[in-house]
Image (cartoon, one colour):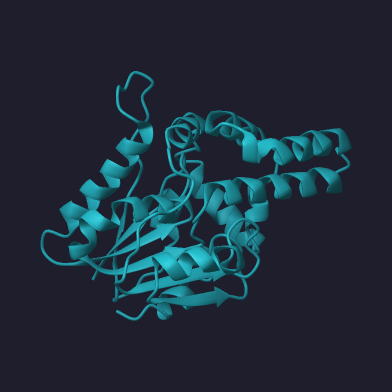
Length: 257
């Protein structure tokens, strides 16, 4: 069965997953990549992001229902279009899903502060601590600008992982299509809602890495119960934010199709 993979980000791509996903007879992987962001576009960067995902799913589902997997921010975006594509979906798989953007941003800030304190950069750590405390009252645009500064801290993204060999493999492939901070800024700034809104009663499997610093069942539980009432949930014991790459075979073996 076709499995359409919606990567996280924004600003990322599916190049690593395309090269790392295991060979399996159960799934034909279709790896979607976000559209190029243009400063001259008259439409919302997030709207273009969503439309591209929807077009991909519609295209691939012409000859039968598909499985859709959304990772991290990809899971957040997928929720926006589920009401329009639900009839074409055999199953939804969410991996390290983001349910609330403010919660995500605060978690990233906490990670940045911890890393700076560990490296002795106390002045920087204090700066981000102060900004984190102001985030709930910030405009979306200002919050994203502060978040981008945190994401640029050396080594921060490597702390999303439990297995550093998996992290190195991922970033090796990502170098072929580097992260676009322009895309990150434009997409995030054009999002109007911080939280997921749409309930989906179909078949759903949700996976979390036990050592994920930015997404957890503990923080998502209330919204998850409301939005995905029939979901089965798995906690993978040896991974962080990328359990589909750190524990690929384990994760895909637990997906009942």
